[in-house]
Length: 212
Image (cartoon, rainbow, N blue to C red; front, side, top):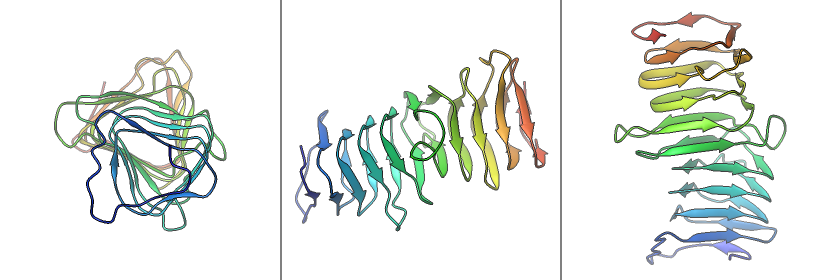
């Protein structure tokens, strides 16, 4: 448990399969250290990028800071507290993972600004929504799959890009409006449809991509 600041002056931290918990107010990380599990039960204001090789659990407040430090998560995102996204980017980068994105819904303290899925071209990963979710700026599915399950995904920025090796799957929908895209929907990879609807207020481009 960390009650204040995390720093590393050049030593080695072997995270193994352990959990680091930031459990009081005014915590920060001043070094871009890879962690396994991170739990934020206090207030963590990032002073450097946060790299989580498994699960990120937020029951307190995680703030990316005015510097918009990047957050990278390999497995599950579980936000039952407050995530202050500012203009930052959250990337899901696990290889061979089946991760769940639990944002707690939509609204202040729950939304992403930029959301990226990129498993790096290794073993394919799938990240599945556990509730309605909002990306207030851009969505990029570079490599791997984002599955909306039965939930609504809204993208409100400039571009929702499904790149060549990416898949955006809303085939498990139950007839609801699953994709609300207020941005340009650019599909170079795969868009998998179901009973749900796509509402797109900008251009939809399937150059080199597919919709099934």
